[in-house]
Image (cartoon, rainbow, N blue to C red; front, side, top):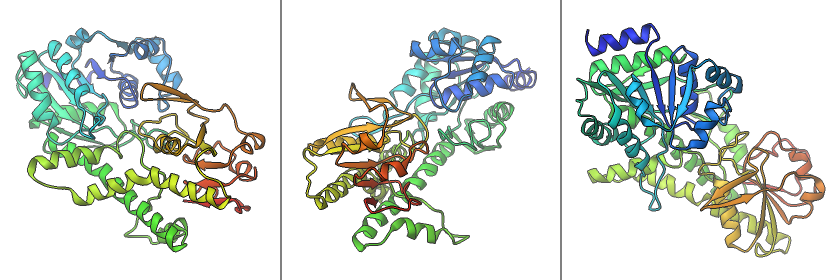
Amino acid sequence: MSIKQQLIEKIENRTLLMGVCGLGYVGLPLAVDKAKHGFKTIGFDVQKEKVDLVNAGKNYIGDVVDADLEELVASGMLKATTDFSFVKDVDFIAICVPTPLDAHQQPDISYVRSSAEEISKYLKKGSMVVLESTTYPGTTEELLKPILEKGSGLKCGEDFYLGFSPERVDPGNLIYKTSNTPKVVGAIGEDAVEVIAKVYRAILDGDVHTVSSPAVAEMEKILENTYRNINIGLVNEMAILCNRMGINVWEVIDAAKTKPYGFQAFYPGPGLGGHCIPLDPYYLSWKAREYGFHTSMIEASMMINDRMPEYTVERAGKILNRYKKSLNGSKVLVLGVAYKQDIDDYRESPAIRVIDEFEKTGAVIDFYDPFVPSYREHGKTKVGIEAISPEIIAQYDLVCITTAHTTVDYEMVANAGVPVFDCKNVTKNLANKTNIEVL
């Protein structure tokens, strides 16, 4: 029986042993979905704390249901380990590790490389490896394939299958989760595409769309998020212009989105956050230079979005000036450090950059976030205030709203008698706006 036939049989009778490398926002939900659909799953992570939490059935990811994790661990369908030698037992392993930018805003694929090196030591004949981490086009074939072949002594396409299927995780999304979001699969060779796609169809409820190569799937993921980056850059620039012209950009967008075709609403803010949208365009522009190509439109939007934290602080300074106060020495309360509403994820959060920019001016900064009581930056932990009340807010010279958490009482904030700079338009429906300025 061929490798393809063996794998298809294992998929159909649920004897395929699954693996997930990296148990973060992408990896843990994927591991849970695999186990929920009847496939025994091993999660691999270098952080012992995460492994111990998973093995204790304790959830730390918002998109995972606590009871699901506890039940799957108790039943033996899911376990975690720091020992990569167990890769020798798995038939399918997804790599879901971080792909950040380095200090020079260039792709840092060290986590992908080190994961591939560890997997290659124990990769068995007749298995599948799929990269899910967002990266530049060519990573799967130019980086992963040589590492896996050299470390294992196996040949891609003959002894093992290799592909790319970009993660599509939107933390806090109440409608689309890992399980029901359509999946894209690209792999090296037709057999690999067919079998890898069959795996995802067996563990997910969403559609699976196959493409001709890993590079197409890698570029597709970059396009998704660059599309958003560019459009957010457009509305951020419009927000700056509208402010100079005395026009409410939020009202402009609300009017524009009444058109039933040809327009999709994007909204301004203090910057971009999350793992994908602020980073992916850098991956593409970096790779494009290899071909002597400059992504001018993309780079322009990146420049606009990257400047928004500074612009936010400049606007805050002008608000304080109207009250005959300077930023230097003023007490500012930042509301929200998560990168989007109602989640505890502060990766690449623009609010943190806003805080940094405030501190550069000499302002005295506190923050409050009901989902993020503290955060780490540059090796230091910053702790927020535990609660807000009219009495607490009255102690500040300015409140700057940087995250639109729905659990915050913005009417109470607005009525505390302190100037409010609303960067997310959360005060839109408040009756009293005398002390509120919107981005």
